[in-house]
Image (cartoon, rainbow, N blue to C red):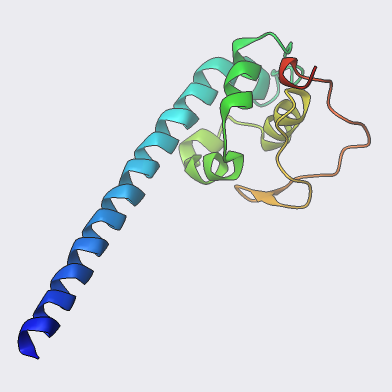
Length: 126
């Protein structure tokens, strides 16, 4: 009985170790994705000066279209990032690029609006 209990505890610990590693690996991947967004979309999401309408063929839209979980990227924005990122512009960029943040959801404290028009067709949907 004690041996089977010990194996059960050992199995549980192994499972927890793997799930913890997976969680941290995904966190690192999200940080890399956020950094790509900042690198390629900076001129579109910067406060006061950014143009939130990138061309569909831009690297910014290319990155945005590849992102699977945009809301997880929102959670990765740091306080320092939010000092210069305009979240309304970020939401618009995701919409214009065809991989919109979901309307009514919250992105780093910003409530994503419902847009009155559909995003332009992407190369993937043509």
